[in-house]
Length: 369
Image (tube, rainbow, N blue to C red; front, side, top):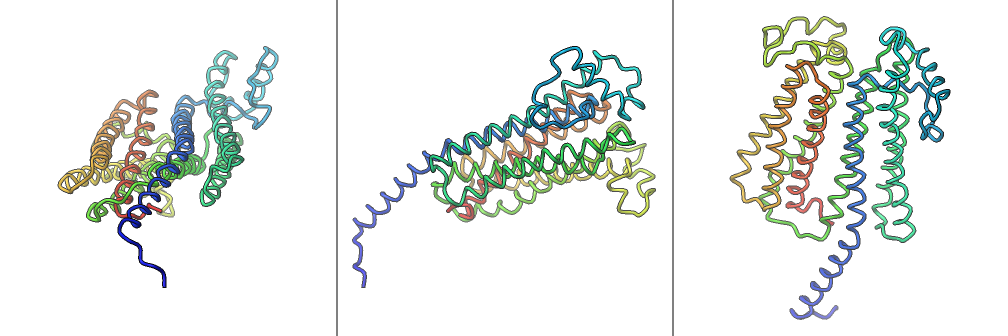
């Protein structure tokens, strides 16, 4: 039989374990901040990708050179060669016929910055990863997650080129399917990194009252709903559906417009019919918005912690701003500045919802180790 521990020994053991956990959490904080810095770069990448698409710059670089492509054209001859490659594309023939070299440079720099930022994210992730790995700063369970993030990042680069190639063949427009896949993978990588960083930052904190966990499932569902709405927005962008039906809440004077089922088979209307795609995005956006506001009203009556209240209020505020940006972008016929803010707003809304979801799940002890 093991000897019984006295109350003093139990308190001493708990204090020792708590102190060790606190030291471990503090030593892990640089890892969490590193991941959050990567998240910030991915956030910027998503917004810059939206600007690249809105300015019609995405097809300006017709070659993919992961290493040598780091440097832009550095001479007049190099610019002429790059421009000559572009003049052989369908976009030049059907959209930008007669474009000057100076005008080409204007769209080239957006796409170049987008690709350069993607390479920068890879470097910012890889170098600290190797450093922390050599210093044995990672818990064994964290390494597979980080390796998965790096692999997904590489896949994202390949998927981006696969998307661009769809607009270099016959039709000078990228496939809306490939655009949605490219955006979706970026968002998933962002969410994966953000959640992992939150786990590291809060690893040693204790769980709160079980009643608070009632918010865990609704907030997680709402985060998924925001992701689905963003995917719907990718199809709106890919089909340029935002340039049609520029009134709200009616579409062509009706709540449910005509022509929503003109494509056969019927399910393709949700991906290829401009009318249906825009209608679906409106419905998803407004349904998610009202669900968030309902959650905000209901959750205020619960005994929330200060941190949970802050995340809750931030979520409601982000939802209001995002809907206002979406409606403004639509009725003003997609000005680039507002459209970029709308895409950034979606990322902010997803971020604060994930923060709220994490805090409420943590109260139930589901996230604690």
